[in-house]
Length: 165
Image (cartoon, rainbow, N blue to C red; front, side, top):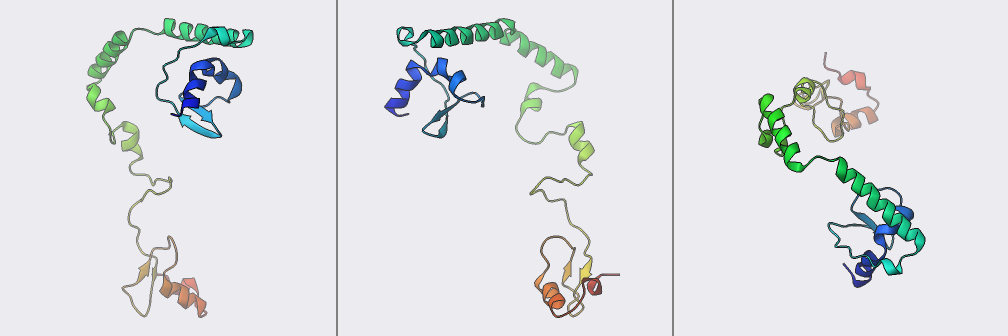
């Protein structure tokens, strides 16, 4: 982080974040038309340099944060409830939050359906078209036409002539 950014962060960022930038993911800061991810900022705010408007914004921000924190239950209590719920359903916390694909009912249910998401292979499909001069060359009708088919169509052939019956 450059020195100018450190100074800007220490002096005014907390009060000005809400006023000067649109709502984006927390932990992002716009600096010279670039979004910078901020992992952690140790803030020491010099309130003597803030205007009345900035002080009001800072106080409102602190009140909102305090209200949010007061509504939350302690982490230990939430962890205990999650562990109990996982055990009651026959899972461990490690199974539920482990990286990788999980065998959820939704995943099992949709496994038989073709996926419409980009870049996902849906498996092999039976060929629909065959090259009469070389029966080993086939095409399923997906993607680009093979060269042999494009050349044959270019010479005046019809796509229906190559259908496998």
